[in-house]
Length: 187
Image (tube, rainbow, N blue to C red; front, side, top):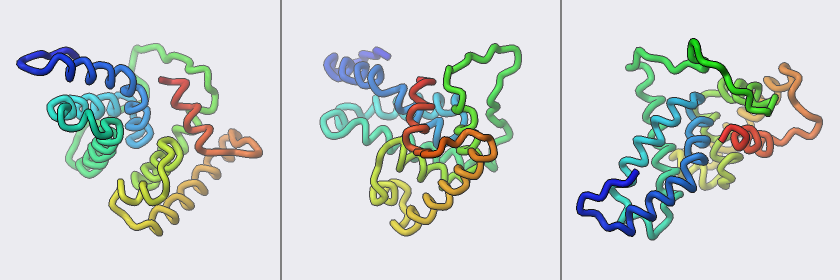
């Protein structure tokens, strides 16, 4: 993504390095929030375009935090506009082979995440995949700390039931470890 129309070459290089280092994690974050890999890629791409335009202002502070928050906000906007869209993302494209990720529980985990409400999914992803504290999740989503705690409890209970039904839950099931491993294998 090298566009140098009157821009500082150093800023272009730092942005390119940022995208190379962080785009896979941002896509995984967006995929866990919205549930669709291609939609996640589209969201991250549009956020990176906007971040590139503001790069000089954000590169010296916390660019990953800024862009991750922008991705979370973009996914939230996508949920809110869902009723206006007539197109729906699909998990399987016709006439395309499906690559085996090598992680057999990934499908069950993503299925369990898909069964959650958008808020529940966001809380679980932010809390366990991004390792944010409950307070940080509350600030990111603009809800109270109690809402994060109760939503997280409800979501984890739903996921445990869904994974038990699939026969995928190990005796000492940790959502964060499984969630992180499932996404890292794909990225």
